[in-house]
Amino acid sequence: MSDRIRMNIFLSVVAVVTVLALLQGLATEGTQRVLLLTLAALGLASLLMWTIGVRRKARRNS
View 1 (cartoon, one colour):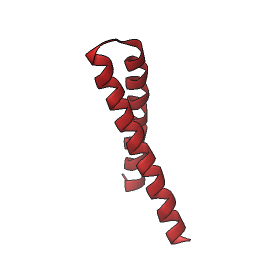
View 2 (view 1 turned 180 degrees about the vertical axis):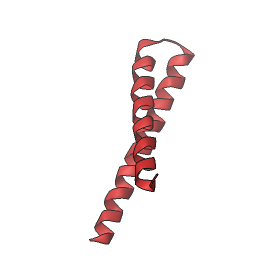
View 3 (view 1 turned 60 degrees about the vertical axis):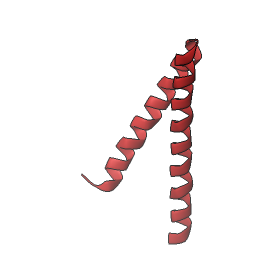
View 4 (view 1 turned 180 degrees about the horizontal axis):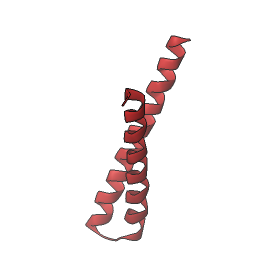
């Protein structure tokens, strides 16, 4: 399995977990809500950092 396929699988899993945590966090109350929303925020941050890294690498390779 190539690195590109592994990265796509990993990012797909991160995206799904992020969306599920966000939806669950918005539906719950109390401390669990904070934990789930924090998990969603970390997932969004990791996807954003990956996107920025890929775009910068593409610009350097052009």
